[in-house]
Image (cartoon, rainbow, N blue to C red; front, top):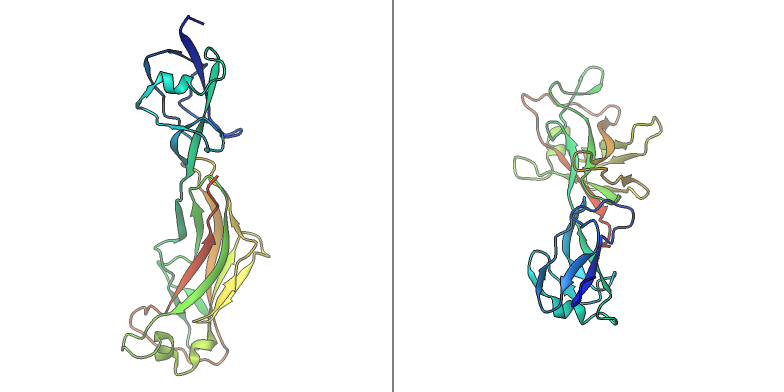
Length: 246
């Protein structure tokens, strides 16, 4: 070590996760000068600053800005020792909930047999995707009946008849297994999704995914209307528990 210098060790403060932008070894800093600390990078997190304490309770120092070397050295008990600074991170929230192509599901029913099927050009299968570096827990799923296009009541009851909203159920099955959890909701209903989790993303181009398939169930004997075009009747709304900031 040169006379009138001290060292700074930069700690990525990310456990075993990969952190980019860290120097290969300690930085040599000359007393009485200014130094520029580099900015670290970590998948799924935004860099905040360097801190004299791992939990962020110490004095902060910005990256890519001139920092007084004497202010750094003042934190050392041994003026010629090594100062460790810890990266501080903010978790980035980035999700797609849910994703189906083309973004909505259209069903059609056979008025003779009562069979319900997915309309051509529509997909009932997709995935809830997360680009976050931490798992995301699902909380609940709610079904909102959409207003009738005529302006009075629900579109469901305008199509199927008064009081029919309880005879039409929208379903969502989660996961690929035959025994996948399934929610079945009438308009205005909700269901708990406790225990279902969207995995953390493995990389920027490898999001965490939870498969979901949508369906429609009608009570036996419910009259099926004849329509010239698809009518929007309901919206499914997810509630998730976002992970806390580290």
